[in-house]
Length: 102
Image (cartoon, rainbow, N blue to C red):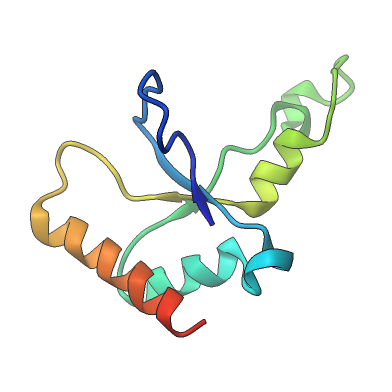
C-alpha cells in the first residue's frame, strides 16, 4: 500500500488516497474499505476515469491503463480540515489493525 503524494513536498494533498497492489499485498483496496466501513469510517473509490463516464462515451482518448488501474486499486480515505483528532485517530487505528491482521 502506498499513500499518494507521500514524500512529495510540492504535492497538494487535499485528498488522502491509498493505492493497493493486491498481488503484492494479499488484500485489496476494497478489503480495506470494508474494514473501515465496519468501524463507521466512510471511504470511496478514486474518481471514475473520464473515458468511463457516459457523457464521454465514444470521445477520443489517449489511454494508458493508469486511470483504470488507479480506479480499481485506489481508495480515498477521509480527509479535511473539519476532521478532529478523534476522527483521525479512528482512521489510523482502523488501518493499523487491518494491517496487523494481514
